[in-house]
Length: 398
Image 1 (tube, rainbow, N blue to C red):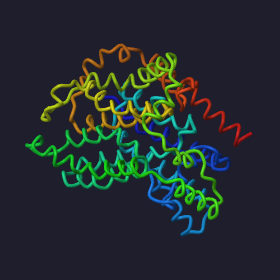
Image 2: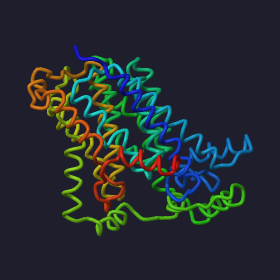
Image 3: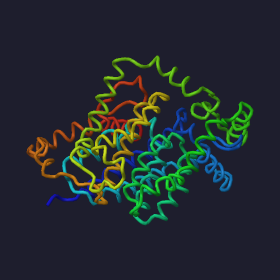
Image 4: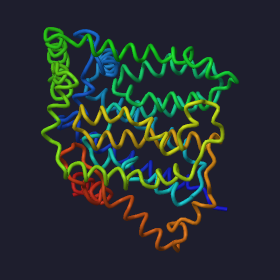
């Protein structure tokens, strides 16, 4: 029997968290990117997208009479720690199957935000933690599932409204898990529980901050906390439509970009795609599932994310977020016996026939020698683990 890799996982997560402490500390002293600016958005000028975390941070800053940036730093470390703890308990009982290892140590999963520090502690980390929490609640009963949709989903939208592009994955988990014999008849009544989250996202679209409200928020940050509303915070003043955002990105498109990201997705998702390919749903009680194999179904569920790629240029982030959400969904199905993984065929795969020492070489090359950059114009970065360790030694030990 293959051993569980929970000890390796806890060491890996501990290392990443240790590095995150120092990286975020350095970034807070410099404070010139979205790791800080995104967290400054708040409701002092009016109700606006992504403002709830900034509002909470301001509340605690005032309550304890602490520097706002210090409060944000502690808050960021707290949510990263919560996320890592949830990841550990979510994956710790898996066995050291080679494709499991490659999927979880993929360079577009846990190591990615630490390697690309512009992504570290961005608000999608809340979405990952809440999605993991949602999967835990979904294992209980229908009432807890509904509670999750009424509380966790609206909270997710308040934190980071592009989460709506990933709602099909949330819905899918609920559908395969829902305990009723007449599910199709209850389809629309269950969809109703998603409306509050969708309504909040719609309000953000039709009711953005006015220039006066944005100026008021900026003044509060400046006068009370000596902070400048810059980058992500300043972008709230941008009133461009979805079409205008796509038009702005269009100039960045090229054959090179599409080939690069095709390969990034193909290689980065590769082990997970293979696991999905060799899996099938046990039950097809929901009508629309009968028309898809599992890999096609996942691609269909992720199709709304194409709008996110069209609207924004942080393509590396979109790949990372898409991967995390897909990985969590797949292993939710696997751990709860909603799918059958054809281990016999998987074991006949060439990778599983390699001698252990050759697999170790492949594992290291795959997991630690490359990662996508944050934005669409960035090339593929090399040796993320080496860069992480080198930067740490250079900044803090030399």
